[in-house]
Amino acid sequence: MCKIVVLVGSVRKKGNTDLLARAFADGAEKNNDVELVSVADYKVNPCIGCNTCFSRENHKCFQKDDMELIYRKLADADIIVAASPVYFYGISAQLKAVVDRLHTPLRNEFHVKKLALLLVGAATLPELFDAVKVQYQLILNYFHLEDAGMVLVRGVKDIGDMKDHPALKEAYELGESIKD
Image 1 (cartoon, rainbow, N blue to C red):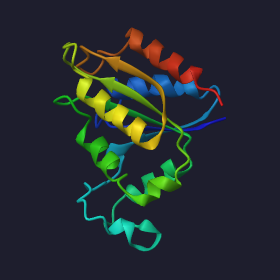
Image 2 (cartoon, rainbow, N blue to C red):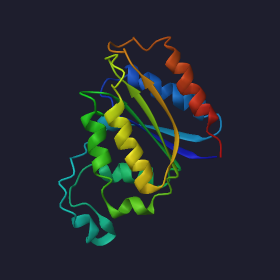
Image 3 (spheres, one colour):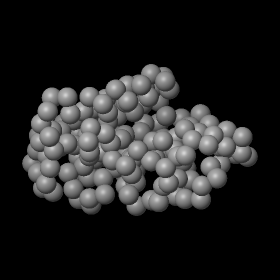
């Protein structure tokens, strides 16, 4: 049984990204321990690139915010799933702040072996997700992680557009396919 943490980057509760993440989690919970973490529920300051975490005791960031809580959740995860709406061809600011704060030696203590990506965008452009996919691939390469899969959904804008969307089944099946 794997420990899966799904970082949900949307601020809209029960919005399209939430629905996609929940569908993934419903499938994954059949064989795994899954935790959905809505990053908008946490106050996470952006990384300022000071690198003091490299020299501080226990690699603690000097910033006093909720990132410490998220570090604890990620420390035991075997798989991390990033779920985000796409704004201007990137992940949400809330999720980006969490990703940037992983620029710390603490990440070297994590047990993560795989990443997965769930994206929702309003536009229908074929290249809508290209920038995020490049960053995702660079992270996989740098940390020698396995790609657990992606579900990329275009043309979904308003709350409710995701209801009955075939991507929900795709996300469910991706989650269900993850076994120890």
